[in-house]
Image (cartoon, rainbow, N blue to C red):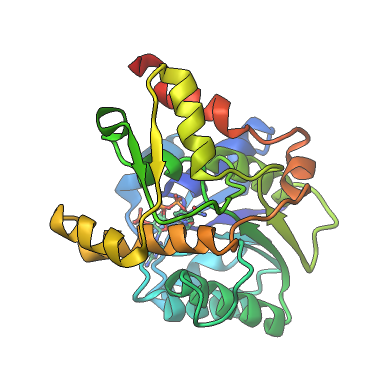
Length: 294
Ligand SMILES: NC(=O)c1ccc[n+]([C@@H]2O[C@H](COP(=O)([O-])OP(=O)(O)OC[C@H]3O[C@@H](n4cnc5c(N)ncnc54)[C@H](OP(=O)(O)O)[C@@H]3O)[C@@H](O)[C@H]2O)c1
């Protein structure tokens, strides 16, 4: 087995991919983890995973860290203001370091224009996909839809108290899947063949609206939850009045409006095929979150 390097290894997705690789029997010394702060990766080091120090902002550190890697899992960065140049650094450094194959965690989307409510997120992904394709590197693009783990975050921790889900997503649906299952499927891509120069739609096999979320939480908790979909302006004003920071409002609004517009409503079997089973559905996941809160 060749050497696999995982970026974003101190983050949740990257770490889950590494644990999935280890569970699949990949030797720890065949796995390298790119981190900018080694203290955040002590547990990986203790498992025998090689730590490589590098920062997406520091091109030379990336070239140095990527040398000797055959496959590279490029986990997209999380700083929306710096991501475009950071991602350009990663693609160029992979090329210069002689990496053979880059697997990239992108985003699912229908709207690829600047008018997309998620443009702040999609811009870097679209550029990165283009750079990868133009680079001559072998690539695999994994278009992850929303992490299902974010649905409880988006509806907020007061949902049972207020008995209301308040988001401007209309009747739009999202085929969200668990982050851990995107990670598991990603580990399967990294350890099997025939993914060269392909793109996969990593989505659930059904899509859900916030009416579904309200219905499921009502069934799970026995408390009737209503779903209210305000206009975007009313939503922004209400959250501003409640003291929510502008950046947080922007993310909530972007995902909700994109969902309302149908941008996140994809049904694909790619994730199911690469997992070898159906992804976890929404209701069983919500049971793990809300069932003890009756
Ligand atoms: N599909 C979705 O719903 C969804 C939701 C959230 C995020 N995402 C995207 O998916 C990615 C992975 O998700 P996640 O949950 O694992 O996010 P996460 O826990 O925030 O992890 C992000 C990782 O990127 C690393 N990183 C950030 N800036 C870096 C830099 N300049 N140089 C080197 N490493 C850097 C972080 O390192 P540190 O530990 O040092 O900060 C961390 O390891 C996110 O970064 C974001 O692009 C997707």
